[in-house]
Length: 270
Length: 358
Ligand SMILES: Nc1ncnc2c1ncn2[C@@H]1O[C@H](COP(=O)(O)OP(=O)(O)OP(=O)(O)O)[C@@H](O)[C@H]1O
Ligand SMILES: [Mg+2]
Image 1 (tube, each protein chain N blue to C red):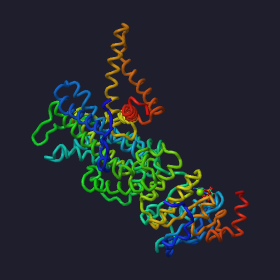
Image 2 (spheres, chains in turn yellow, orange):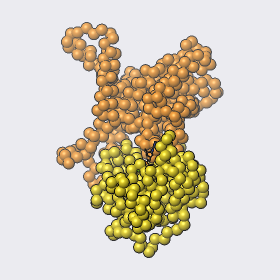
Image 3 (tube, rainbow over the protein chains, first blue to last red):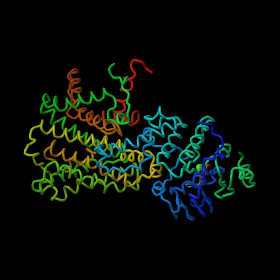
Image 4 (tube, rainbow over the protein chains, first blue to last red):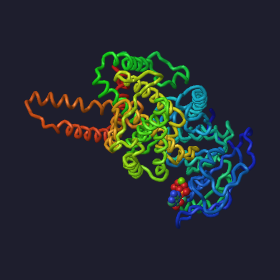
């Protein structure tokens, strides 16, 4: 694999029409306004970054997109369908997968089982066949196992496939969580700080995985990241939030030159 | 020395997905089954069969049921005995009231009835967790035996609700001796254990564990939390129900509702904790341990007292039993939450590497 160089110039990748748009989303927890009147869109096959200081509302935004939180106002349009409120199951079945800021793996399960769980919605056999483990169920398990093994190879975590994830180091857990999200073969992948707390090499690996996923499978990615270098390198467009308001939106170059963005970041000592 | 997997390469995922991927484990298991099916009937005394092996198997089945719910799906329950009672009384009533119904069908329907009751008492789990859920399942524990005593119909209006199980007859073959009953129970428990193993290594098993470990992430993957929990209650209670039916039909013969009391629920919970939370094997280890412990203690106490020339008061053995139970529960909860099954696994891992520590 090549360097995680900027792929803005990659000619093979075609950005399509709007896949997701959030319109006038407002979300409050009691008196705390987490999001105020946020609108932006995400185009098919692009990598869209959401940045902003701590507490800006980035994670809350992802939580609204896949229905973990219900915004008090606004609408979410995904793949041509409009939702007042999304629910997590609906989001998953429409092809939205995600990772969490604080790793949310199934701690007692092996890497393999965690990633297999990501394919939950693609499995069909009924309880009775599962109890017998014959015919369709055995075939289904094998077929999905094969797919999961591809993901394990891709993320280079072959050696730990049988290890309970609770015993793995942080960086590897982050990869497993990406693997679990990829297992669903999502159209839209929401990544909440996939590189937080990683060292340089781990970050480079993760960047490469994100770019490869986007390149090879055409997966649309919305990514929250604090490392400006990474954001500038890999994203096509950037949304900037501050205190729950949108203060910038555009290409990395445009955002970097935006006065409001510079102020927000200087204000938080970055 | 012989416990090695060197040279055994699993070349397909199919081979890797077997229940026992390592050959030595397969051989050991086959031997164990041979002993259970051939050796035990040949050599075990009636006392061993009726007082130890049959209850061991019945309790193992109930532990399996509780382990599915608590160990795999993460929902604590103190209502195990209540679900067993439903199974026992339902099987009895199906035998009594449906002419010509095969006994195995009655056992299955007993399990199914318990599953329904289990789902009903599982409904609170959709809103509450952990300790509070345990308290809610206590409701089942007190309600069910009370109802079975209160409503005479359930016991065909016998005094204090005692039922006497009908004789077990399958296709004209009567299971009237301890050996025969033992073999029947063994067959049922083995089949249901296999089914449980299959469930926990399939999609539903992963869904249970996902809900147990991180429910928000499970939901985001598309797992329906409520349905998954209720299926766990249903399957778990089904197992407990069948165990209850066997408890009445193959073990005790006649039983009253109060036999299915909170004590029994706790006893099975202890089996799960000591055997291994979230382990099929652990359910058997825990049941074996707790069934054998009183006998072991008795032998030790009497031996020890004999040696020292002491005179034991009659209450001492049962008191010692409680003390040892308590100590073990605390030990396992604090030191090894995954119980005997985990200790066994560690021993195997050590053995695999022996004599080289790395
Ligand atoms: N479940 C919740 N209950 C109450 N308040 C919440 C909840 N989730 C978020 N908030 C509040 O909403 C605001 C935005 O939080 P959010 O986690 O979305 O920020 P963020 O941009 O992801 O920050 P960080 O960079 O620290 O992850 C914060 O003030 C936070 O305290
Ligand atoms: Mg956040």
